[in-house]
Amino acid sequence: MPPFFVARRAHLRFIRRWLGVKAGLPPVAESAIARSATAQDPPCSGGPTLDGLLQDFFLFLIVGFLAQAVDGALGMAYGVISSTTLLAFGVSPAHASAAVHAAEMFTTAASGSAHLYHRNIDWKLFFRLAPFGILGGCAGAYVLTSFDGDMVKPYVTAYLALVGAWLLVRSFRKLPARPVPMSYVAPMGAAGGFLDAAGGGGWGPIVTTGLLGAGGSARYVIGTVNASEFLITLAVSITFLGALMSGTWSISGDGAGGLASIAGLIVGGLLAAPLAGWMVKAIPERSLLRLVSCLIILLAGWQTWQQFA
Image 1: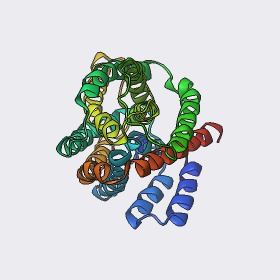
Image 2 (image 1 turned 180 degrees about the vertical axis):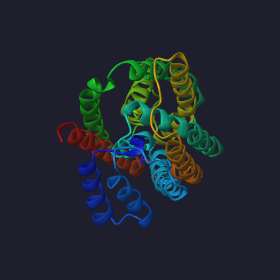
Image 3 (image 1 turned 135 degrees about the vertical axis):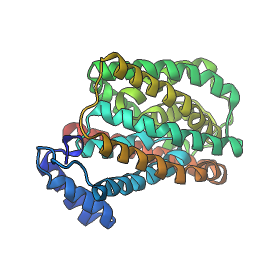
């Protein structure tokens, strides 16, 4: 298998043993992991086989479905889950972020449409949030293709852990129904867009948690953040394309395998997206807030473990 999907052999044997055996992955996923673990470093002369491409497609279809189901209902985690999976297969951070944002152009459009249908969008908040998210996303994509974007991750992890704990405590109190201060939205959108592009995921964790921490209604915050994410994703993808065309960034590795993974993320996300608007509308706000806070704390713990592993 070409180096685009080949990580260190020992690392992938670890993934196969713990994910394939302990978690009981479907046979197609275990087969894809085993195929990557036993691959040699030099590319195969015949290139990727149809069987290999199909295995990659169905593996990332499962990943995309689960990631979008969580993201659409709780307002975060599609980028984090998808990027983490790609990185586990040896994809570089810049390529992982580009692949995830390419897939999100389709999944965020579908998820935003579902939230629009169920009337989960606060339009005043949307038009304030989206422009600053676009500016931050373009800056983050430029930084990722030019510099190392991992320097801020420890600070982001600490922020997420603190906000997650605060939201969990807040869910057991009386939930005030007050609008989010507009002066708070612009810097939150810019920071979320920047970290989403630079880290391959972060728009939901940063913006959703920040707006909920400021007292926003869970239903309208999650719906608005999901709907605005399409514009941020489009801007980030255009920035990646511009960097590619200008020669400041290049794509290496197996193009066919990369397209198979992106296609799987897209199809899986599209299958799960229609459920998002209904779930946010149906789940009680107090329960929704507790689910979001627990997910944030788990993500912060996972990222902390990665940094020290």
